Length: 302
Image (tube, rainbow, N blue to C red; front, side, top):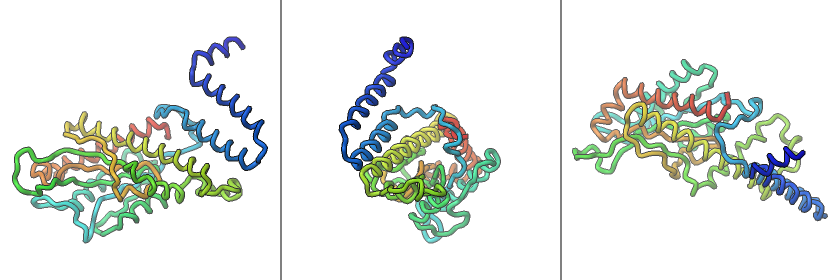
C-alpha cells in the first residue's frame, strides 16, 4: 500500500489521474439530472484520452487495430496534366512513381492491401480520390505529385528544387470533421446502431470525440510526413522544404492519416531529369515504402 502510494507520488500522471477520478466521483454525486450525468461521463472519457501524452511507440492491444490498407493517389490525370517541365507532364511522372510504389509495397509487404485511385491516364475528381480511401477504410492515404515554381521552365539560376510534404491544414478542419462523421469507426462496426444506441453526431460530446480522432490523424500525418522527409534527406541526399500544413483539397475529406508528397520541381531541368529517370523514380518509391515500414513499426499496428 505504501509502495503503491510512493509510486503514484513519483509519477505526476498517475497522481493527476487519481485526483481527477476523485473529483469526478464527487461531481457525479452532486448530479441529479441523468442527461447531465451522461454528458459529464462522455467528457471525462474523452478528456482522459486527451490527457494521455501522444507516444507513437506505445503498445496498444493488437486486436484493436490492424494496419492493412493503403491508398496511393497519382495526382492529376487525363484532361488535367498538372504542372509541366520542358518535355514531361506531372500526371505521367506521378503515375509512374505511384505504380512503382504500389509494386514495391506488394513485393515487400504483401499482407498490405494497396489501392490506386488511378492506374491509367484518366481524370479523377479530387473529392472522388478521398472517397475511394474512405470507402475502403484505408489506414493511410498517400498522394503523389510534382512541384512547380512561378517562373515556369524559363532558364534561371538557383531555381527552386527539392521535395516537400504536405499535411492537411488545421485551419480547414471542418471538412475533415465531416469526413470523420462519415467515416467514424463506430459506423463500420457490425451492430453499431444497437451498440451505440442514442449516439447523436450533433451532440457536443460526439463532436469532442470526432475532434479527438482528427487530432490523432493530424499527428500521425505529420509523423509519416517527417519519416518520408527523413528518407529523402538522410538516405537520398535530397534537398527538402520540410513538412507543411496546407488546405490541400485532395486531403480535405480524408478520414485517415494523409500526406501529399511533392517529389520535386518538374520545371527545374535538373529535377525534371531525375523525376523522369528510372533511378530517380525508384529512389522516390523506395523512400516512401521505407517510411511506411518505419511508420507501421512506430504506431505498432502490425
